[in-house]
Amino acid sequence: MVVHSNLNQFEELGEAQAQFELQNKKLLRVTLAHGPIQAQSGSMVAYQGEANFTNKGSGGVGKMLKKAVSGESASFMEVGGSGEVFLAHQGMDIQVMYLENDAVSVNGSNVLAFSSSIAWDIRKVGSGMAGAMAGGLFNVFLQGTGFVAVTTDGQPVMLDVASAPTFADPNAAVMWSAGVTMNVKTDTGGMKSMVRGGTGETFQLAFSGAGFVLVQPSEGAIFGNQTGSSGGAGGILGALNG
View 1 (tube, helix red, strand yellow):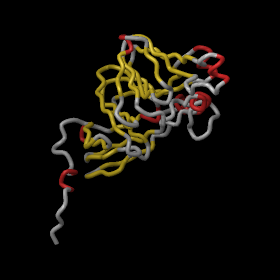
View 2: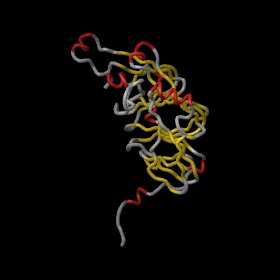
View 3: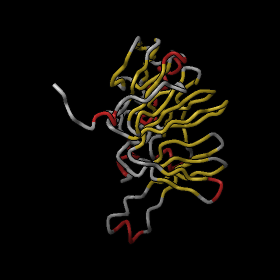
View 4: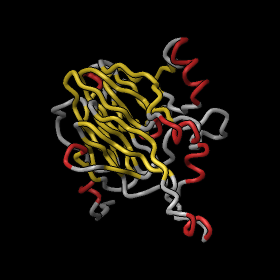
């Protein structure tokens, strides 16, 4: 039987040139011959050839304690072998970057995968009274040389923090580069605005320094976490913003 269709437009890419390559904007192809990777648990949608998946736990006692204290829900598996694996997360767009002895701070829920040559940790970000009111914010800190893939709910914008005072909604900020400092800012809109129900923009993230912040066109992905919140939600900050 001959089947006529346009499915050939979805054929796999040709021979891989790099460890991480986008098959399309929502699907990441990883060539394992370049070495093992860390990937978001459950993000594999297909693979060809040899691939194995190992739960490495929380990455040590220190990280386990940080996850318990912060409530950060980031969970990774090690993927190794000699084949090719395809990764995705809920149909979100994927952005790929290559770090050269550099670092980025990423919302844990937006981390899709990274080379095993990249070291990761959970760190508290932001400071001040507003940050304390929000229950504390925690990100996944990625540092070293290798590939990093993050997900965004739509096509993001990359803002140059040094060019102007830069602010973002907590649920829209995906990541920022080393050299950028973040603090939580409160903006009630004034007493009249509060009496009328507020603006829904009470908490904002204020960025300073030299570098970039990546912002997605959606407030659907919850930023950070708060100790004791359920289901990995953004705690007080996520509840009051948006």
